[in-house]
Length: 189
Image 1 (cartoon, rainbow, N blue to C red):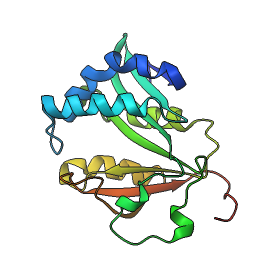
Image 2: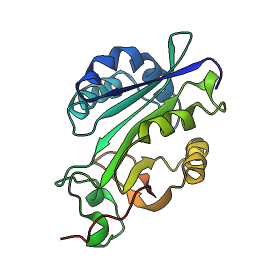
Image 3: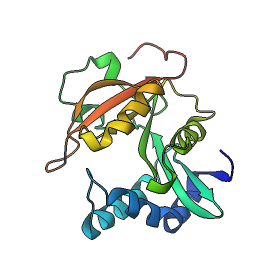
Image 4: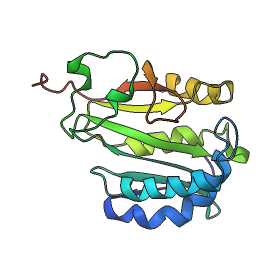
């Protein structure tokens, strides 16, 4: 994509990038189906600060002329994760076990409206996963009609729906999706 520069930040360097992409986050998530306001943004900031300390944390920023136009980040699921417990449909134990290296989760991926439909989301996603040595990647996406383009993109990138996730009381429901990317891990313990 001409004029778009991607920056990968990993480990401790991720936390220092919040101010760089927070305005883009606020813009993207002000739109439906999210319709986030100041309280939601404050909650995101708190969560991001915790996420930035997770194993395997990565953040990719997309910039045009120095301006952040898109962002994506994620990390490795820990062995004690509740990620799969949030899925409403029963999943087999050999699917849900985690060892801290098996599954990488995309927590956020957003592109500001004027830059959509230009391949930037795919570029962010590709750079986020580049070089990972995990078996699979997971993410969640909202089921509302406004999120249909995101769901279609994820399906075209190889994700499949595995169930409906409800991450906390009062949270909306999400479609939980998985994409196999690496060699199969050893048998579950």
